[in-house]
Length: 400
Image 1 (cartoon, rainbow, N blue to C red):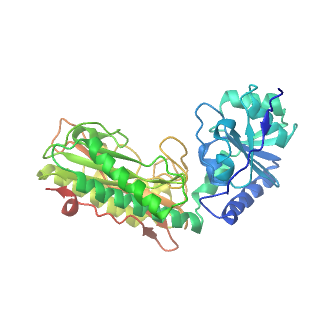
Image 2: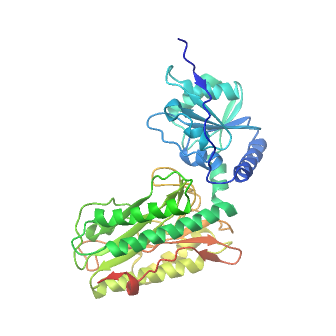
Image 3: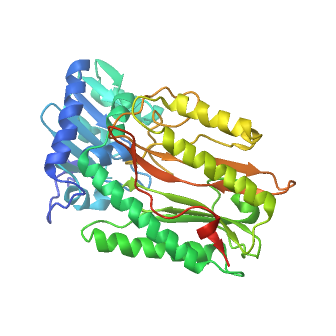
């Protein structure tokens, strides 16, 4: 039996996070970039760009996946193990490659692009091995890195994206309320986190009944575990007097939103309360700065001065905010839109960014723990729209 290198397996109905017109608009902008840079085709291999331009969010599990964009086609390349699911969940065409011969993924790309082309790639994602195999199979005239072009494109959100992000923020708030209800002395971080995650999964299913459900998670930290923003959940049991960190992350079709709040179980000592209030003041000040025509670096410097004047700057551990969209803790990042000293991006209407100052006080000092508040802001023509509604501060987040 002669087994094929690739084939088309299309069955069922296409169901996408956005309308075909939305994807056509994104591809149109991309093709303008391709024309300006003299590209014959692009091959995307990252989860975030494939999802952004096609709607398909792949599960690699050791196999390569791709999206080829030419002047008139967009075609996802997926592994046979997934059958027709990639076609049902992508805008455009889909080719399935088989495992019967090594490197059929690259033969599938060749079947679309041909040889001797100028090929756009993601220089921040494509592995050395994959680039070498593209060179071997396609024999391109040149490779051009377009990862920065696509990042800049993703940073500016469409109305459809903004609508989905608003809903994601609302789901994050629902997870926050479920977590608050689950907090009690003796409960494990794990138990509290599961309550928040389950509430968000159910709400996503209610709002998006045709979606695929994956990757929603919670980081709920207590005591010393609050010292890092990305510390995983443990089985530590909550104790009276603990500082707590609530972090909910609903994922809707690859789109990430978040809610993060400082909490305390029982009474708050004066030193902790003072630090908490100072971080809240920085949070509110930072929100007031997020408006068009200010740079990320300028916002950062102003908040740095705010903390420095209060003798707290040495306890800051990372930047003050980042972009939102197709991203996750294990794929994607719009690094050009982060509130850090080394980012000169100018804020523009349609961008989405968080304000999330964090202070970490070492365990050897009074007020020990990590303090963090996090809201999501859409930059508007005259300022910003805060789409996070869950309250912050001691009036709401000290759990009796």
